[in-house]
Length: 101
Image 1 (cartoon, one colour):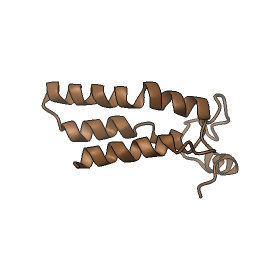
Image 2 (cartoon, rainbow, N blue to C red):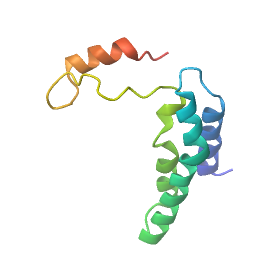
Image 3 (cartoon, rainbow, N blue to C red):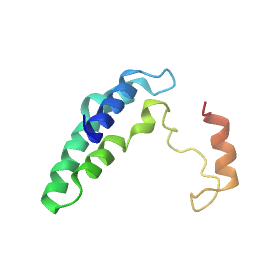
């Protein structure tokens, strides 16, 4: 089995595990309708541009991978600073919401 086939198998296993912390409807929709569509489009585009097809496909499969475990933050949450960057306020706010185990 190739590296890209192994990666696809792992991505499918992660989505199909249906982690209880995920945003269920969203993550399930992504898996059924989006992730591999993006991967297929990335592969086609890479062929057209003579780019690395394996890397492009991997990026397409992994671009939303955090959704297998985490929920999106609701829109309109406090940014913590005027630039929206990594500030102490953002880190403190996010740490109250997100735990990594």
